[in-house]
Length: 147
Image 1: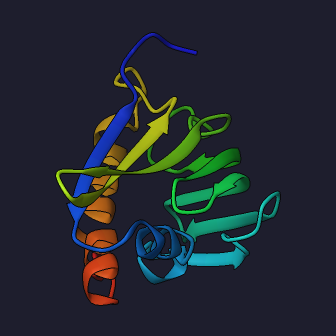
Image 2: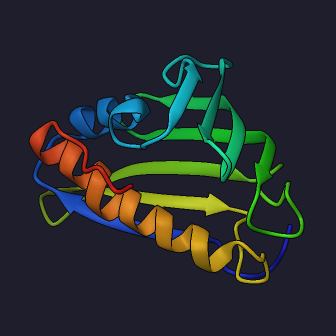
C-alpha cells in the first residue's frame, strides 16, 4: 500500500455513537445512487452504481457496533479515469469515537491517495457525501440530494 496519505474526513455531531453507527449502515439513505445487496450485515456484498459514471462492489468486512464499519472494494469501474478499477482493493473505514462530549465520525478511504487519477473528483464527492449528506442524515434523519 502507498505511503501517501489516505483520504480522511471527520465530522462532529451531538448524536450518540449508536445513532451514528445506525446511520452509516443505512447507506442507501445518504449515499445517492443505485444499491443492490445489504450494507448492514457482516460478510455481505453490495453494489453501488451511478449509471455511466461509477460502479463498485463492496464487502462488509467489519461491523463493530457503535465503533467501526469497514467495507472492502472488491470490484470497481470508474468511467472518468484511465485506470477504471482504481478503487479495487481499497477500503472504506468509518470510525466512531468521542471528542469534547460529541460523537466524532472519522471517514477514511484507505488506498484512495493523491496519485490516483480520481483523487480530486472522488475526494470532492466523498467530502460532500460525508460532510453534507451523511451529516444531515445523522442529525435530521434525511440525507441531502447532491446530484
